[in-house]
Image 1 (cartoon, rainbow, N blue to C red):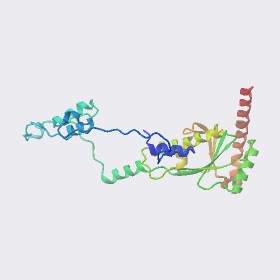
Image 2 (tube, helix red, strand yellow):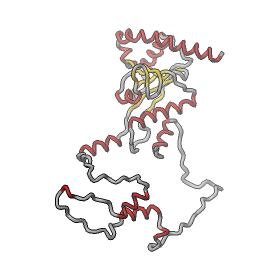
Image 3 (cartoon, one colour):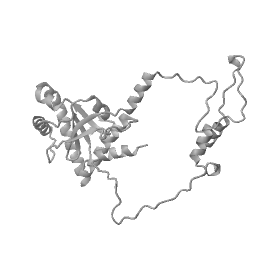
Image 4 (cartoon, rainbow, N blue to C red):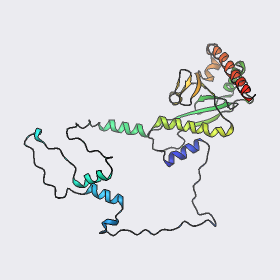
Length: 283
């Protein structure tokens, strides 16, 4: 279940500002006040359900005989919960099962192991990226906090031009980082990071972003894990994907450029083929 702080975090990732009223607006209708009649200590019939349940759980074993010490381990009788707890289990409709007496309890993890597991469940994945969307169709991603340098952006434009990928506007990069809000409790770090990135892209849909393909220049272990690129596809974003050297690496290495050349030919066919398919659909 998504908590309210998590919902606010996803809204912030989408670029939506959530507002909370601190004062009553002028001429606004006042909130109706309600008077709750509190039960008296001896009025058990009007006690709150949660209090009644807690009372049952805390109730001692009334009129229960004192347990006898068995003669041998084999003759040990199964331990049953007190009547109050059995009633509470009945009220919960069997949602709290009783442990079988012959069942061996699971091994107890050591304190360091429990602390490590707790820290892992509370630690959010951290990553940052720069992203541009070519004509609302192709996502271009560079991992890291810093935006691409002017040299890297010129190289990207030249690579796209050589591949026949000719968007109407030059790539304009926007930053994204996760987590958006610090200090929130984390239950599923990977799933929540993917949902946050998905919320960011969903928010950009208002600008006409409808991604069809993903190009990632550079490698970041956490981001690669979030995107889940395998066999030419990002399963997290459900998009065809390519991941290769960083733009700075391509700028400094002639060999890296030569290795990229066959991929540029594929980009040309993919960009032109999608454009022709869209034109036929419009016709």
